[in-house]
Image (cartoon, rainbow, N blue to C red; front, side):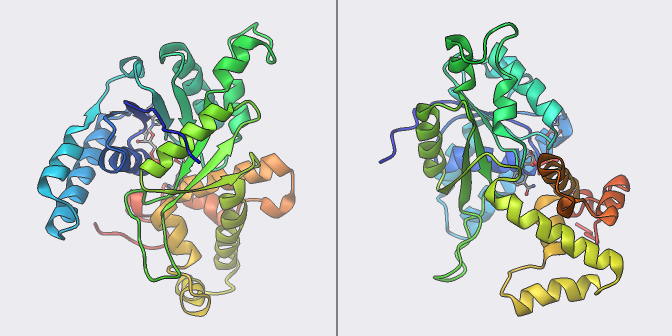
Length: 313
Ligand SMILES: NC(=O)c1ccc[n+]([C@@H]2O[C@H](COP(=O)([O-])OP(=O)(O)OC[C@H]3O[C@@H](n4cnc5c(N)ncnc54)[C@H](O)[C@@H]3O)[C@@H](O)[C@H]2O)c1
């Protein structure tokens, strides 16, 4: 049985695809006031206008009362620094998929956010244990009480994109309703129980994974997308035929190339694949050269307007 999450205020760091979605479901479904921070003012205004659009669409389709939409929107405020989020009960980090960046951010969280707050990361592949190790103050023994208290608050709470959508296509297929819950070696049971309860309050279902590179979801998915890009690179099949094969032959709602660039972003795909490769030292995970070149060119997919496909809007 889940315990109450006890989150009265939430901080979200990163207003990209994921952070915006997490702020949305937290304010709308969990009814929790949210402080959203990003280093880029442009990303914040893009995120807020997406939230406005999604709420207006739900109201126009009759899925949401206008007053509930207005209440949810009023719960989302912006913060101009991590410092401004110091009183939250939980913070969810959703910045770019980079270990050094995440470790630096978690050190800042541990120093600036109230000492009983849960420190969650939305990472797709990076070790939660490595991130938790970063919050231990210098000179403190890792097995000591101070280290145990602070690193016990770190957890992996992996939402899926697009977070606001809870599609039910038919009785068999239910998409995007998942949150993957990952425990670091150091995570406390209380942090895990409250994080699970919070994800459920956001309208999600929880699956747990061990802290392995990519967790269950991306240890399986990302090699598949990477292999699809290798097939394209080698000329085994065209872009359209690769995607068509999985849509029409394997009952996938979209092909692997579409999935990688429409819902994830090729930069994130590359970072995850690199984490699998480095984390296992297994050559079967080497990233496709074409994937690297697409990221070099900043052809990241929908979020940058071009990937293997073009996006006019
Ligand atoms: N895209 C997906 O399908 C998906 C799914 C699950 C998890 N994730 C994970 O979520 C995280 C974010 O992914 P995304 O797709 O939202 O990326 P994104 O590129 O859309 O957004 C990242 C945001 O982080 C901000 N940022 C970077 N450094 C920052 C800093 N120091 N302080 C404040 N803001 C900073 C950027 O300005 C940007 O707005 C990554 O760890 C990713 O692996 C992504």
